[in-house]
Image 1: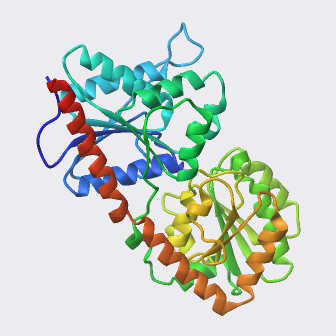
Image 2: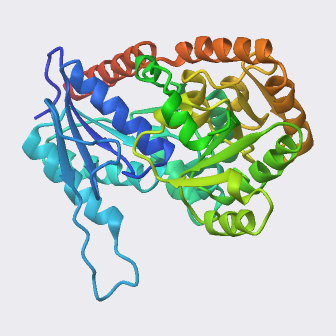
Image 3: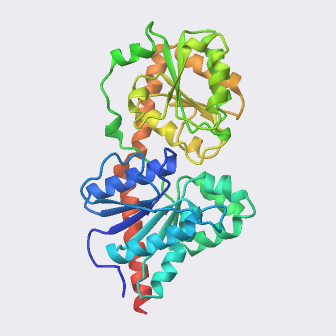
Length: 390
């Protein structure tokens, strides 16, 4: 039999990493928006996604329970996930699986698809590539065969930028078509009123607020944020807000504590919502070595915050140099600081960049991106149904 019904609304299984990373945020917000339109969404992962604050109508969560196996040094998560996918597809009668990240989600989806096919249950799966599964993990030779196979066996493949699409074709022998569907924001969520009292908490003397949000991994080049901030602070009063957590945080925090600017650098840790911080920010700095898209930059722009970033990866597809932010070479902290000061010293120019940032962010509003996914879902289900009829 086939789980593909002829109906307007679909039952969709979304497989994701439930953490604060961009892929998990996008997958969760996509599922929530799909559910609001009437689709039935089943999140499948090892813990509740951080952006899924509460279960609501049309949303279900299936936990992948992982146990220790005495024969293995590491838990075989891919096999446990595969079994869970088989179970959920069968008993929830899902129409489609949408997996975010190539490994192990795409390979687990393929295994589940084959197991279900042996039971005459046919379900397609779509793989969305987000970045590090290709640009970092994917470059490890030990993963390459699995990633290549999983992408090619996907019934449809999407990625979040033209840059990532080109990287995927460059580093892997892919013969499957890759469709670019960008990351997104819900623009109305960022239309917050001015909160001067909240801003005074961090800038009591009217200082400019500069913000950085990331997972504090090496690729984010967080040390460059501090270098840029120090150069800006020499010329204008400002404070730096760090949001997030990760491997490099402790070293950055120690370095700032032992320097003269320690009172002007604040570490806020993980926040379920960053909108309130972005709403009081004047500049956003993202000096990453590479970004497949730059979701945090887009979220800043949706809040009307100009972005100082690098010309690497998909960032130039989000930030228009000299219009709603500035681009610089990776590691060129001198140029980043110079461009930042150009804005902070010219209130009219800063206001124009803020307006331009909001305008640009509207191009990535969920209401423009969601129909692209819905169309792909329907096309993929219809294609599989036609194949099964032959």
